[in-house]
Image 1: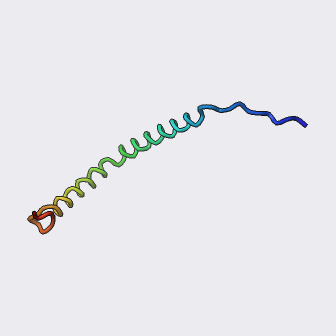
Image 2: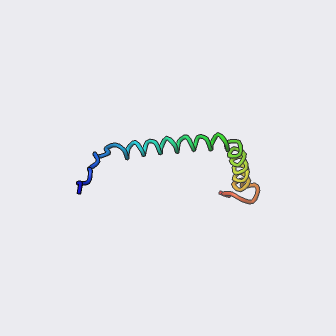
Image 3: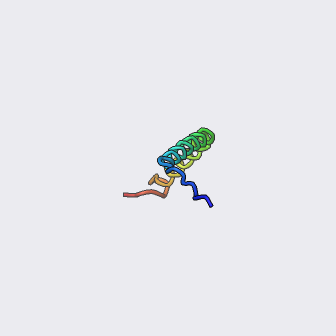
Length: 65
């Protein structure tokens, strides 16, 4: 019977894979931001309006110091 063949160590593969994964995630986040940015901005505007209404002391909410 033949002895099993030993493969050379694959040094640096993990680092390369992590960098490729990081690059993929950056591209995915950029694509999602590009696709949903108008919707995101509309949601942030509504959140800002709600927070302003809640924190305005003259409207029954907020900090009345």
